[in-house]
Length: 339
Image (cartoon, rainbow, N blue to C red):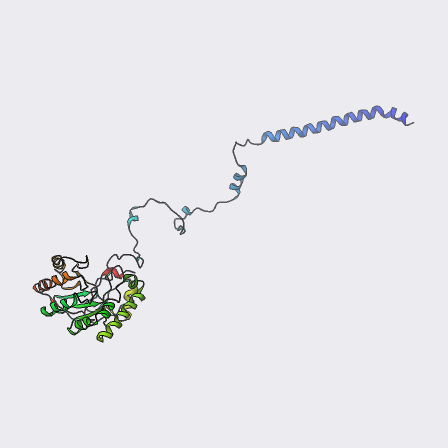
C-alpha cells in the first residue's frame, strides 16, 4: 500500500523539491550581489597608510603647544634656540656669585662725615672720623715684621720724622715680637693683616676670615697689650670680599682699609727702586688723600731703597703724613661691595 501511495505522490514531491532548490539558489545570489556592491563602494586606501594611527589622531585632541602662549616660560631643562635681538647682548642687572670677580663700583669710599658705603644687603654703622688736612698721605707696610727689612724702615721713618702704619701678620709677630714692640713704641700705627696670609684659609668664608683676624689679634694683644680695630685683607678686598664679609667685620667693630696708590713692590720678589718711585709719582697727583701700599717682607730691600725718595717727593707735593686709626675714613675697593 505504501508503494501504491508513493507512486501517486512521487511526481508532486519531485516538483516541490525542484522549486525549493530554485528559490534557495536565488536568495544566495542576491546576498552575494549586495556584498559585491558594498565592497565596490568602499574608498580605495592608498598604500603605506596607517588607518589606525589616523583614527587616533582624529579622536585624541592634542595639548596646546608652548609657542601658543608667549608668557609660558620654558622648563629648566628645556633647550631653546632663538636668534638674539639687539637687546640680547645686555647683561641682566643681577648680583654675581660670591666667588665671581667684582664688577661695577657701587660706592668706593666711606664719606668723610662717617657715612658708610652702600650696597644691597650692606648694613654698616655710621662712623665718626677726624677732619683731615687738605693733602694727607698714609704710608702702609704689609706682611711683616721681618728682621731684614722692618728695622731699616723704622730708621728711615724716624730720620724723616714721619709716621706710617704696619699691617702685621700674627705668625710674624710670634716669630719677632720685639719688632712689633719697636713699631708700637716708636708711635707707628699697628693694623691686623690676618694670621697666616694663606688665601685658602683666610677666604674659605666670612667666618674663616674672622677667625684669622681673631687669632692674629690675640698674638698682637699678648705682645703689646692692644687689640687693633683696623685691618687689611690679604690681597685687598677686591675679588675676595662680599657683602657678608663687610657685615661680619663691622658687627665686630673692625674697619677694613684697602689703598688707592700702590708702589708695585709686590709685582715681583724684587722690583727696581726707580720703578717703585715712578709708580708712586704716576698715581699720587690729583689725590687729596692717599693710602699707599708697600711691603716690609723679607725680599723687599728695594722698597727700603726707594722709601727716602718717595717720602721726599710727597713732601715736595705738600702732603702731610698720617697714621691710620679707627678715626680715619677707610679707602675701600668698590668691587668688594658685590654679593
